Length: 633
Ligand code: ADP
Ligand code: MG
Image (tube, rainbow, N blue to C red; front, side, top):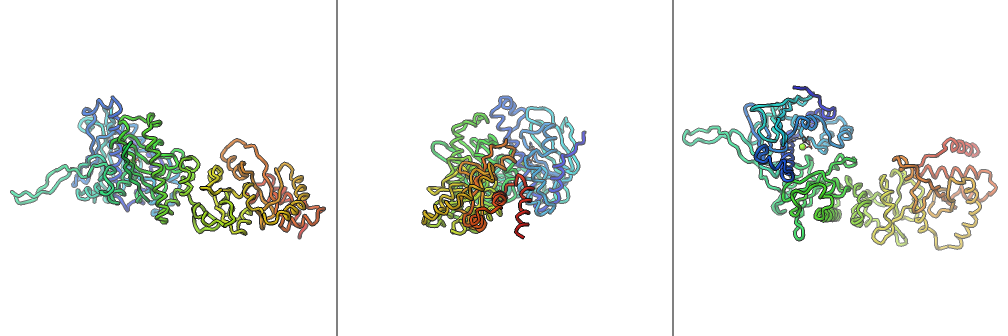
């Protein structure tokens, strides 16, 4: 026997499970049964597609089932399956480490507050280790399909585990896994057949494989006139593919229970969409939206949560082909009647049937979300709090559904409390308002205080605050909502809309008077700016930086540099000056003023600072500021 240590993350997780999850210890059974079900799914698929495994059916591979065997006296329970099994290496890596993406991230979010942490862990999924809430010793005996050796993993869930080969009567006669639980004090309540039946029905009724319970049943012996114990084996679950039943037969509880059994989530899902398509293609989909975004949502190696079945036979999970990446938070199943059972991953990638199902599924999910957004605003707000951002990714990648996605996404705004939709913003447009405006490129606070918003405030025009780091990239590709223009206020074109057209002559006169000063400022700043021009969008600030329509903003360039992007050719920004501002008025009144040079740089640098762009030469800025300060004191 060799003693092995748990990976640090496992020890941390174990500690957490035992110390903060005591409120629902019964879920250990759901987790173990779902692992057995997964193992049976995997093996069944292999026996369909692989000759090697096909040949073993009946000789090394038994028919799929899950068996619970209770020994009330010894306070032990075994959960056995005839699934794919684990080799020695599998036991070490699957039950001694956590390979799941998001583990580190998850652990780093823990606060040490048991109640908060138990919520987090619910989203993360507890898995196999939950068994240590109810056990002081667990033995996992397993034989991998296609191999002859049986290995046993033993642990007390504290320090580490032992692995040994077992032979003779202790070895398994066919592929599969047996988990033997020695209940601890907390767990001894489960050494009870009624309790076990109840839990299996509650959490695992719709597992597709039969679950049997073997236990000592009290039966009345009419002859002897006394009750006696008889060892019996009874099937406990319905073992039906629940998604194949009609909606009218299913209760909310059925849906929730099934969701929990496939995801390991503790919380009820926000909503689900169950669809059966008939006609050209026949398939059933059952999609769930988790109440909390999955832990690995923003991890590159995220796990997807939709399983593919063909005629109720599991084919694969974690396939990125089933839904577009931006819907990676969706959980559930797709069950097709038309795909071949032996379909492989490679074939799926360009399979016409799957493409059709995928397209229809996305449409379905989005249209269901749309109707929730219209009919149940409160529920929709919960959805948006978790998933607004992935939807924005969709805006960037899913051209076909852009219109719907634009309706679904929500925005911060200068006019609305909380979040608003584009439709709502449109309904609030002023009669003379030419477009819907938004501002990007900073934190919410920076954006709300940006000088670019002054004129809009004055004119009582709403501006959407887009403070997500992907907003600028996403929205630079979108210039219309229906037939209404969408414009960024920091881009040149937006200011065209603001020009005062009532007095064109006066404006021209004003521009003429300003020209020498603007030329002077441009001459001072040189190549640091592309252009210096009068601004129509400022009210209280003297200057602002703007970008051209097709150029990334100063802030965006900075972000791309931070992301390791090669130095982008840096077009100099355009500086806009507020002709009505007191500082500019003073400079205009005294053309020979010797302070134009300092003023030009300060106007430029302050505009950069408000854009959130660090100054290239802060020392000179400070010297200049002090010089001006000194002169004015
Ligand atoms: P998850 O099921 O989310 O992967 P678990 O902690 O429940 O996480 O299980 C860890 C891994 O251990 C599984 O992914 C699987 O590879 C392996 N495993 C657990 N139980 C079984 C079983 N009964 N048969 C085969 N493999 C199993
Ligand atoms: Mg599991």
